[in-house]
Image 1 (cartoon, rainbow, N blue to C red):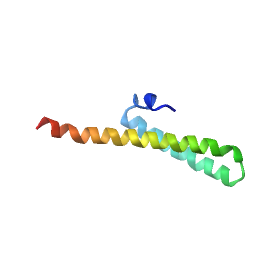
Image 2: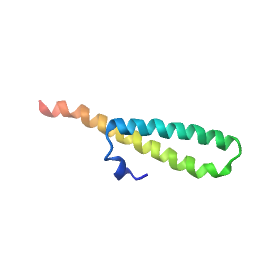
Image 3: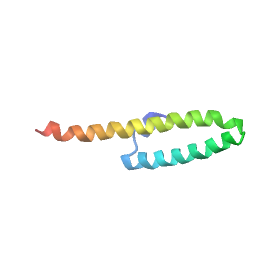
Image 4: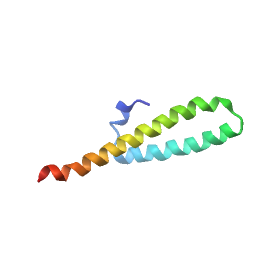
Length: 72
């Protein structure tokens, strides 16, 4: 998924997606261990999506922490 679309989501939506992606990753790793070789590209893409979501959550946290400093 593209980061531009993810930027439209709220922090709560991002956290829900992070949990959803982590669950998918868990299931795909089991499939990979079971010998299904077609899961590797899915795992790679999902790992990138998880990183994008975590990055956006962190950006929002940093923005929120900087707001009180600017009001001083």
